[in-house]
Length: 148
Image (tube, rainbow, N blue to C red):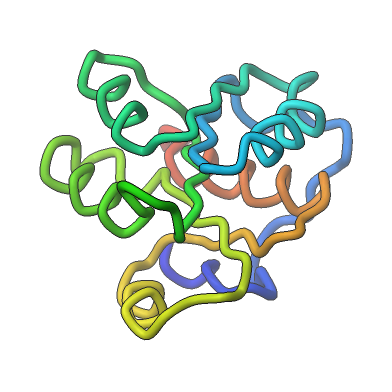
C-alpha cells in the first residue's frame, strides 16, 4: 500500500461518484461532526460506524467487529491516532493497513515523524466525497483477494 499515502493521492485509481467502495467503514474522530459528514457522504454506499473515542473503537475491534476501512483522526485527546495505531498493531496487526489517517494540517513533530514512518494513506481535512471514495476504494482493492 505504501506509495499512495501522500496528500496529493498519486497513483490512486479514479472512482466514479456512484461506485460503492466498501461495505463497512469506521470513523474515529473526537469531533462528532466529522462522523456525521462521512455518514452523509458515504452512507448510501455502505455502513458507517462512528466513534469519538479511539479506546472504544479498539474495544469494538477486540470484540470481533471488522471494518473494510478505518478512518482515524490523527490528533485527538485521550487516545490519539498514533496511540490507536500502536495498540492496533499489537492486538490486530492484520488490521493496521486498513487505517487511513485524517489530518487537519496542524501536527506536532511526533505526528509528522509518525506519518513519515507509517505506510498508511492520509485523508486531509477538509475532504470531499470524491476523495473519500477514492481512498476507500484504494484500501478495499489493496485487501481484495487476488483474481489470478
